Image (cartoon, rainbow, N blue to C red):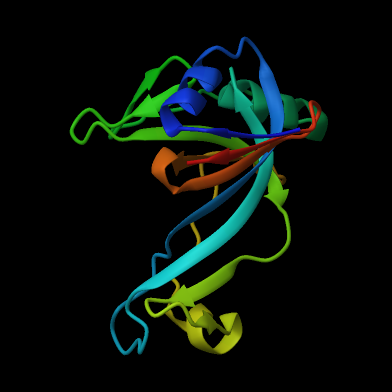
Amino acid sequence: MQTQKTRDEFRTMVQSLSSEITVEVTMQGDAKVRKTGNPFPIVSKVQTLSGAIGKIDYGAHVQSQMAIEGVQGTFTAQSHKWAQHVGNLLQNPKTGEWYLPIITTGTVGKPMYFSETGTLLDYETQVKPYLPEKDEGKNQPTAVKQIYRQVKLENIKEVTIVNGEQHIKLV
């Protein structure tokens, strides 16, 4: 089933979730590229993530992975310095912007990158040389990292609820 929701309606829906749900989230936002020597200083990235949203517990996900790998100890997730939890979402108190926390299980397809004029860019030659190095889960004592992302609500274009087969286009 396909529906349209405003971002406020979607935010209310996520806040009402009492458990995790599996989703695919398509988003479009600015790619964080270095400006020095880059002929495309403004790059937009379109990507679809799969993962869990709702009442998620990042620390519990890491603890589960530690148990699977036989890693001893306790993991405690650090609180955000720039945002605060408001139910199942995050809000930046300085800007008022809302973010959707998602524990990702991967991407659907490959990300696409566009110049400010809308031209599709080649990842290997026009984008990759200007991307900063990744910083993934340095605090986790596991081989397989649990990736916790915060997606700005205004950057989300579509959400597919996998188990419920509901497709939501945000307007």
